Length: 440
Image 1 (cartoon, rainbow, N blue to C red):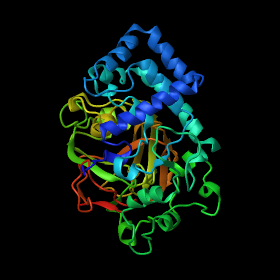
Image 2: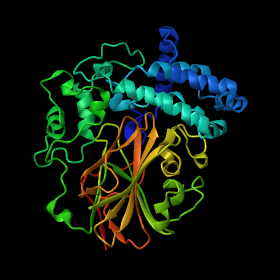
Image 3: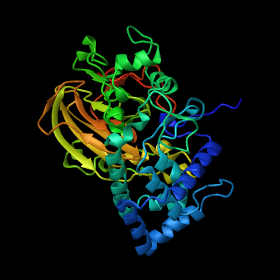
Image 4: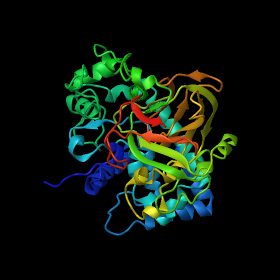
């Protein structure tokens, strides 16, 4: 039996044949459904036809897909047709997801091969394209916030037709709950149950005796909160020198030599702080040799952000950006934005939260939430001037791929704790609010 490698975050399968089969079914579904074109999708279509550069770009990126990839989406018209279909669907689970990988990013899957071409690099950096994509993703976000998306929050089979999935089941079916529990780094420890259903009920605020476990929508389920007492800052970590994990996330990278301005698109995807912080006036308080810790969130876990330190919110900003850009230095690679996590810190839609720590050895730091794909909605829930304790909520991702950074000034010397791991693409979750570093 061949070993199947998941992509980071487990949002998309690495098995190309399976992914192509999924897309082919989705294309057939879209062609047979005859859905009216959503106005936001129509806007992108009109922009492509009305701009010769965009028409050339969208045409070329499908023409440039290497032979042998058998991409079912042959042109941008088909791409738009399938995206239009997705906007009234919620991601569901399949009985083969545990062995093949989740198709949790359907739009990412639709443009998967195209965005890795030379034309694709340029197309998905174009401001007009990202403006139109933002409107399309906002339409999907709106649907995912309605009760119409509850149909995937069931215990048995998903009855709404989703012919692209193999034996689709609800997120409260045993295999889906097992997949969620498998991402829990504290499963089976202390009072945290090993049993998947009990594990979910123990960890998350829900009403298992109510329809849909009490969740009002897919978005309500996706942004679910931990129960009181779960993932609290330990007494020892209340020490002002301790930095705690801001998200339930897996360490991706940690550098102590980040520059204010760098060629972030080159090999190694170095961080360019001015670009990450969108040239915010507070960025000038950082400098060369700053520290950047980056970690990514997995598909089936908690997606809220919590403060890594005690301190005052000095400034906040939502930064519009790209949604499907990936690093040219990675070459043609159908891995989506996953291998480009360093690169997209400067480009993707993101949120900046500047916090002045009570600990003078830390001082001003910056939390950066980065949307990797799909809805990419970064909701800041704190205000400027607000005081936060370590572990307090500061915001949330709505549906979509997500990664985040903690940025510290050059004179902040941190002894990091990666919980026995080396930051890379194949790490596992460190619990929210667990110690990840101590300021020396």
